[in-house]
Image (cartoon, rainbow over all chains, first blue to last red; front, top):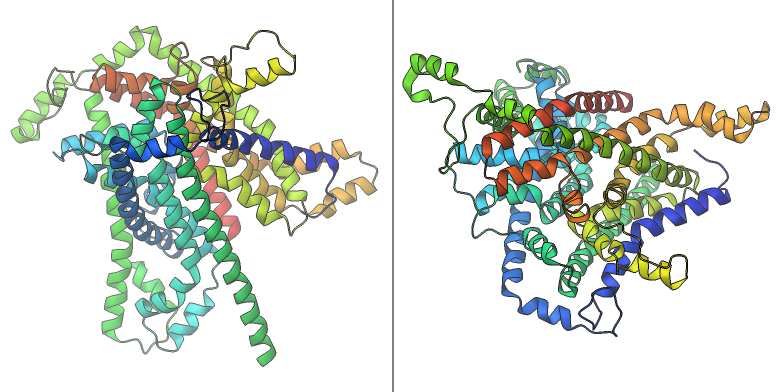
Length: 273
Length: 321
């Protein structure tokens, strides 16, 4: 769509983004509040950040969360990329309808159902709840998000590149690693990041799948939030928001650079012709 | 799965060796098998287990239910067990009006919130689609960014704003609009705000992608022929954006029905939603069979929207090809 950008359009965007960002900005601002009361400004202070790093329970939970997120995002990226390849490349095989359903259903499945069903599976097979079960649960739901992200890149992928490689004698596996993988790499990276943050954020599924000794940061934050709003939680949330925003912004800058580079390469190639 | 290797070899010249064909057939099969087996084991089978446990009796033990079917006794044991399967948990759900009311109010709350999200999201998506092309990637990233920050944190942020001595009331009383604080926290209004806020990116993104694809010359033609802008919007823009509207509404509605965090943190103890009922049944009452029955019924409530969602996904995928 290309049309005039009316005043109504501009106003609705500004209001929309104010609605999206104001609560987060306020949360960050009040994490630097000297007062114990979250909503009354008592001067600038970083004391809550200091208190945060002295809170051993919170630090332990953060460490568990990061480990779960690293392992589950990596496994989910491999499985999700495989699922995306199956969805785009193998259009006919027995059970494809079921497969497609199983990839898309977890995207919208209420978390309480996913969490409960996974917990009952772990109990049924006699797996002790803890680090491993949370990780398995996170792999399962985030691989579907990875699959969707990678699939959208694969659909627009120019298959003649692969065909050319195979015509020149490259075996399919080598073609995949030398041609397909580099082209879909940005999608795989953003899939990994999405899986990582999904795991970092998840409360409901982790609460079901986790056991003693594997309390994740969202579970810890949730139990403290229920007791009341404190600046310390604001500080913890601010750090999380900071990490995630930095990651997303860095990734988008890298992507943009690659895009510019690619365009330059293409133009250079055209000139050679 | 046999035609995996067939389709691969069709694209290849005939000099492919027997060995490489064997390898490619094998990797093709492995490629399908691994994610397939994973999803079967960690997604489908758990539902079968939930269904099974929903038919068993609750017991005070660990795990807190009597097994519905014990496979160790063979066929005869299976038959005996099948006769003992009980629908007690489901009967219990129909006897206590609490559950019925929780289902109804969840669907109503999710429905109203979905409409509100559409009303808020449409002008944003529309504005984005009409923005200068150079600005669009930035705007798109700004919509996605909150989606990356934790759901829990975003809901938590609203507690400080909405509570009686919170920032919204301070602000409104400060400028003299109201004289006594508004009670928003722990009401359904707070849940609506929470759902609209948390799910807004899910609505804006599909709307934007269908609006962005639209050919503006259609609207120009209508306006050239004397159609006023507002009726041009309703006659052309809105119908053409319907796939985005449907996808966005389903993406908001389905998870909102089973939402737990928002009603728990913003809705207080007075508001009724089925996700919380399930959570309490499981964690507070430790009644796993009833929690399973609640989950199965919730799934039945959501089957139609989920199937619709998958149809929409499949159709969008076909169009992109």
